[in-house]
Image 1 (tube, rainbow, N blue to C red):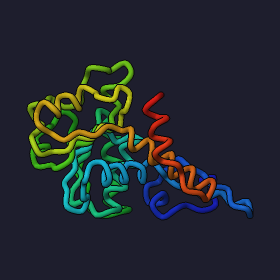
Image 2: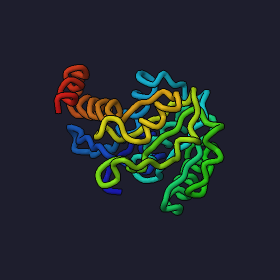
Image 3: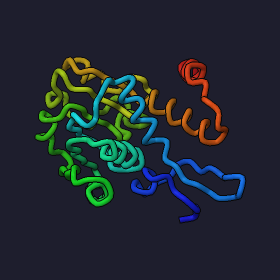
Length: 206
């Protein structure tokens, strides 16, 4: 509400994490979390969103960015659940209204839709901080051939990802999402190409 203009994706998403001030003094909003996640999914996960069905745990800030960018790029279906069910319902409504009617609310604790999904996303924060060792989904609901993505990158391998590996899933953590969203910010602010590999090396050192 405080910005003069919004990037088209940012406007539909209803959330901005990056503001660029133009030489004329205008404030333009972007959301690089979405674009960073999307680049990581394509380049590191080898996922084609328009051919996939997704299941997302978490309808907060990260979940909104991730699910919105998937809908923006033609995801076939996105199931969304959250411990705070109203949060997930609002995100589903926003996606269906602003992007395409591809999102569906799933009550928290209902894992029945996961088997039909190509990609399972954890944007809930479960598995980091005080919840290290916990996972949003019992591992018996995960299946070989699925990609499991966790927006968390500290720890690098959450319980969710370790369970997924045990079940034969491909796994990807949130380091690439963090890296690419930061690179996108640098490029928006400076107009210069970000040194992505140097940034990756620094992130790994940290």
